[in-house]
Picture (tube, rainbow, N blue to C red):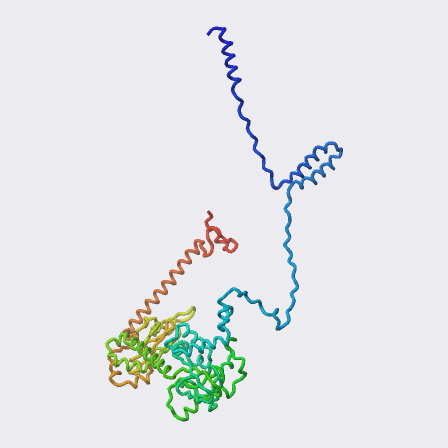
Length: 509
């Protein structure tokens, strides 16, 4: 390259460099103000620092600065709870419009206007006493077959409020009878004879021809006669309390009862004893006595079927003819025993034959064992050895009752047990064929066990008990010897409660 061309190259390079645009300027980001700093107070403090050096007293300047410094921080405002001013309530006078609770606005509800126009109740609140009685009587006017399930339920609930019914009938029986009750209308001066059913006065008044009435169910073994009770003489819901009746007298009013549920012969004295004379037009509910008789017959039939199945499933009666079992069923009764009840002890004669319907019974045999208390001599004691149990659908007691042989074992209930039993007097009243059949099929309860079997079982149980005691004692001693005490783990040691000679044996991790 020649010398004259060098300045020209430098000049062209300088011109090219001068033509390059400068880089863009970088913008500085905006700083966000802090919410906890009062910038007005901060500026005042900075101004205070600029004028402060002119003062001569440095200590006073420091005090002024420290007094002003906390003000640069925003202080949270304390909000006090709002105070409510109690308005004085004016006590309204009685029997005024102000004393009545406000009713909901139903001016735009057409359904409520229709109900009011037709004499029905409003949509608010439950039915009143009079409305329930009217509905109840309207349902009773229908034939039982035409009533809906909900109407049957209403009748049943109303009958449950009558004490003369609930005190002598089970709830399930009353529910069945409520499906066939009817209502009768009697004009003034009529004589209502109540020996064919149980009657409840729903409306009107009546006067009994005699002052004494019999119990509506004769089988309750009640020899004391009673006067029919009125509904108001008992404590019930306020909805069903009749405010018009004030006491029980010779006149029978609403919810008073008379009659009987037992089917009785139409004897003149009996007819007069159950009769009342209406003193005004009356609506009377009637529960026919025949319906109750049919209910008892059906209940007895179902119970007998259950007893036949129970006896037939017992091992000794599987091959028995049905007629012979029905003969036993006529004498059977249900009986329940609590857990731990001793039914019969060894050496005694049982007083009944039992067929277990539910639960089980434990069987024990007596044995003479040896006992050696501490620092005493060996002595003989009588112990009970568990040999097995009698489960459901099993029977016992036939041989003991018929042959008057003492029981060789003790029978104890294991839990709540329900049995069908035949007492010894009824069993001896059976015909000879049935008693002989029972002796041929039945066997003594656990009679196959001999004394050797009982001793062997006793020894095995004693060996198991001794081995369990020895094993537990050995394990406890081994753990105690190695410093292992229940309740103390390797992460949680309470050294203050551990004996001194055991602290060294605890391994520390």
